[in-house]
Amino acid sequence: MRAIGTLHALINRLERVEALDRLAGPLAGVVGRVVRPRPVRNLLSGTYLGHPLHPMLTDLPIGAWTMATLLDAVGGPDAEPAADRLVAVGALAAVPTAASGLNDWSDTTGPETRLGLLHAAVNLATLGLYLGSLAARLRGSRRWGIRLGRLGLGTMLVASYLGGHLTLVRGVNVNRTAWEQGPEEWTPVLDDEQLAEGQHRKVKADGAVLLLHRYRGAVHALANTCSHMGGPLDEGTFDDGCVICPWHGSTFRLADGSVVRGPASSPQPRYETRVRDGRIEVRAAG
Image (cartoon, rainbow, N blue to C red; front, side, top):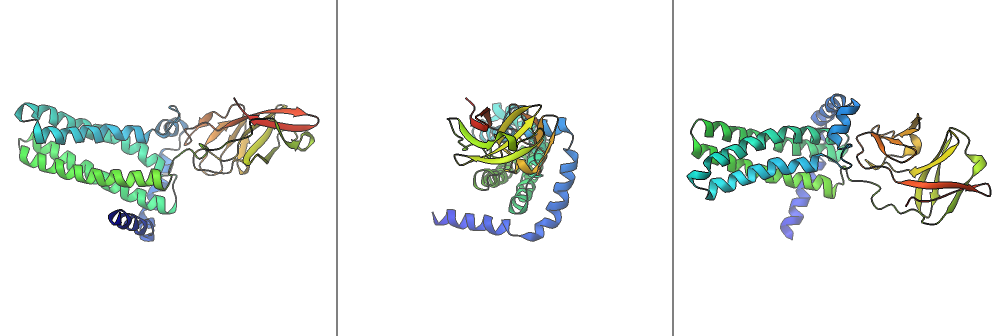
């Protein structure tokens, strides 16, 4: 337990190294501009999948390189071709994995951006070691190839720890509405006359904060907290039946909460609405 506490203390110190901002800030800005086109953003964010793409892709290089190390250790001469192929497969899979990770990282700020930069640097070192391992194998220097692969496995484990910390401790790119529970029964939240065509209001219903918007005569209600990074949708902009988050531009359709543009990958929780006795009522969609 003491070792775990020491490790967390080290991570916390790294998160406070503001000198990293000199590189992290400009680099994140460049990545943000590269991934700005909607098809690129949706693809790398996992919008088309309904959950983030990066965690899924990490299994490919991690699995390939781990199995290559195992075959190097116990497979014998007959397993050498398979081990070499796995090293190559892992290197190829690392490219889209890195692209999706950089896409997610470009939306972070402060401690998450600093630690994410270190995570990326260690992953880059891992890729370099495995490329060196592959080159040595192809030249016939198998002993050096195996050594470099084992070093790569070590740095990969460090990068995996940092990635897990970013996701599970810092909460980077987790669904910020996962635990939201709105009213199951019809609940009045606003006088109907207070919401004119094209207007929006932030309201509360049984502790849940909702966004109301009237579009083409219909009243729509979504969770007000953006599922991507928790941005306040009521401070966003509205266009053609959609709301655009003010923080990172995630765009949700008001009618059903579906994601039109990433970086969000989880749809926005939707609430049913009705007008009764001059009051707008809402309840969680079934």
